[in-house]
Length: 177
Image (cartoon, rainbow, N blue to C red; front, side, top):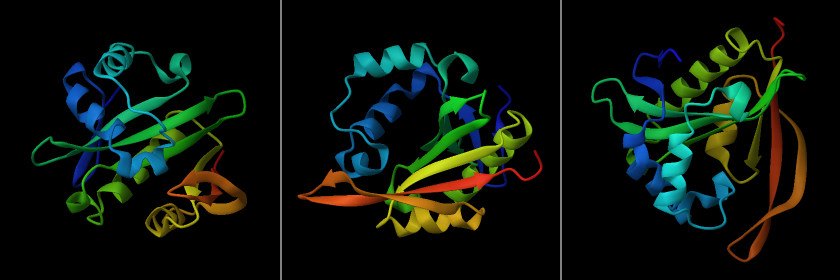
């Protein structure tokens, strides 16, 4: 896969050297709510996942890319295409920036723009969708910036910190396809 490069970040395939980075993200309970993670992952399982990361999106039905800063090549987050459905020409998209100091700097916006363009031009998808908790204003703002529209709300969808939370479905249709 060609590296996707933006002004401040680039997206690249995961490498075996990303074990500690992916392990830290997958086991950070503070972000489990946005990643739908419910239990910790072992390094063994993540190592197995990374060993199979060479599968293309048609085989794995997902594509996970590291978001890296151009200046340092440091991985700061992940962006995923998941539930890839070539027959119906759609996929889900999710994004996480690991540390607070890297959020609100435009990195997520740039990564999402690169993935949207890749999805619509290279994969020729007709639509992308995102599942976002209705209380996650930052993600709603980010996805709305690119024209994702809220098409529905799943009431009491996730249970977190003693209460049920709603999750909205946002969708972006590729009008050029």
